[in-house]
Length: 596
Ligand code: ATP
Image (cartoon, rainbow, N blue to C red):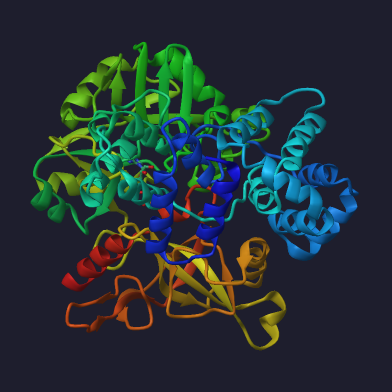
């Protein structure tokens, strides 16, 4: 496929906010791709040249991209930057300048670039990413500007956005999976049923997190080969997560005999060991390998296996008092700079609570008890890596004592896990349940919401931009963001300033793709900022779209909403919008609350 043809698909994708239309366009795009390029096309559609978990960054600053664009058009960089100041999108700048300044060149390019295929553009982008050392800025700029010279205005619009890390199509992984399922052909070239194809694709995604690999396998070898894609060291497994239950009694009643583990309050790190090569991933698939040198060292010293995948929670601790530090301190380690310094002042320990792979064999289908036994033999006792405490419990009284004991030691609570359960990658179900501090009935857990827009306020605080935030949760079945509340009270002037600082960078002039809302705020912003919200109660409301459905008879069932919501913290450092609370979690919290 030519890059120009791909750009035409991008244009169509950009101009729709309907999810079903997105899937249709993606399916057409994928059907038009062949096996040698489908993986590249999948990555490019998300503005990447590798899966999210690979730390490949093209990373060019605005000034550099402006320089490349100026060079390709024979104009001054200042001219490009001036228009950029006005339009705020380098893609729009490239498109405008290209067609205005250089119609003949762009005409020439139009015929030339009909031959410039996706693979060639991809290779140059990779070359840009791989350029390191002295003269990097100039070399990258030259590579990009040479490419731009061969592209027409529409293609240049999308190309310049990629090194800036902002392709602006906003297509999430589940929508790509739907597009692939819709386009899927079997090995013999016959069309597959979209619903049937979706499940094995999703299973493979949960095991490997690599959409490009899945697409390539599907195109080259068919759906059965996708179903047999195994866990691969170096590719993160999508984390299993916890459901909620209100009490120890309910947990035993529902789950039977469980393994009770402390709920450590740090951040999740999945550690992969492949010989001497170590890689680490966050729960939202970010590559964190460079951030935690002490965990690399600990893994090399303590893991008695050639290859392994460990599921852990990392916490910072005080070396003198040996005490663990609160989450706010631990989370300071999620930085890309001053790594050595931070590793000294806030050293981490990782509590290993699961073993998912060992010496060439995936363990995810084995029951938890067996995985824990193997884990016990695999980690040399206590160092930077420490095995999580595990206790087999089958009566609620003992479970309550354990819960209270951990809480009195300052922990968040416990995680109880079904002994016989396999590791269900990417799932949140009753195999794992978290029991927390105030597990006595009230709505005790916070809700992670995504900011979708804000409404201008009135009165003297308007100076800070105060008003109300329109927030939503994630509907993982439909891959869209649905509204649950407007949050107005409880935000300090400082918090409003902070919100505006972040929001103004990502505001858009129309409802973004994948947002489903009956309310139109004064300003829409892209669904990127995750905040933790505490509310008194979950109620039903016709003005919110979370969980609202239209019944077969055409009646509309109201959505779910938060009563008296207030902001607790920003979760942007560790949560992607798709990691926000989901509609099904919200509904299950609503049901639990109403049982009391
Ligand atoms: P919360 O905000 O309550 O931590 P969350 O949405 O961040 O919830 P959940 O899946 O609901 O994530 O809670 C599980 C998280 O708890 C895991 O992602 C992990 O980071 C952490 N955790 C701490 N200790 C354990 C443990 N022993 N087993 C599993 N997860 C643990």
